Image 1: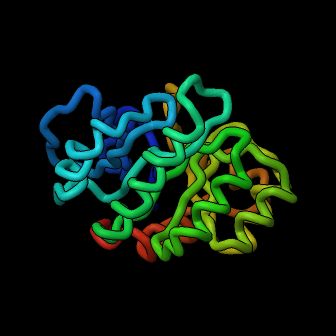
Image 2: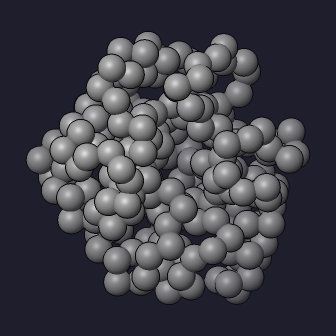
Length: 211
């Protein structure tokens, strides 16, 4: 059985597992073998970082753009966040790589940018903890939802039924296998069934992931 961690900040606990590691481009480094996501976090929105991001995004080991997004709790101005995020939406479109999104209390703004940019690239909300109603709105708009160890059971169920579910460890010192076990138990399904669904979703939207 293959485990896939869609968003993490550390190498996988088990080398045979697939992990998409989010890099902080404020501290750029060489990209060894593996799978990476590069983006400008809304906490650190900076237009001057966009040229470097474009360069990194072209690397074959980079499979996603992010995490990028909007956060109303961040000190960075909303206008700057929206400008930098919109630039990353276009970059995701130019590179054909999915967008991994951080969003805090800015769901209407996020939806508005998706509509105005007419983006057709898959958007994945990472670490989703919203309720079932919000999950349903996002799923109907075409978003994927990624869950860690803390989540709304109703939201999880809706993502599962919509076939738009992913799993992640984010910045937690956790094993993706713990997350799979939690999600499968909550859904009352075998872990193998959950793993196959996540594998299918990953194959659908990540062109460079082969498993």
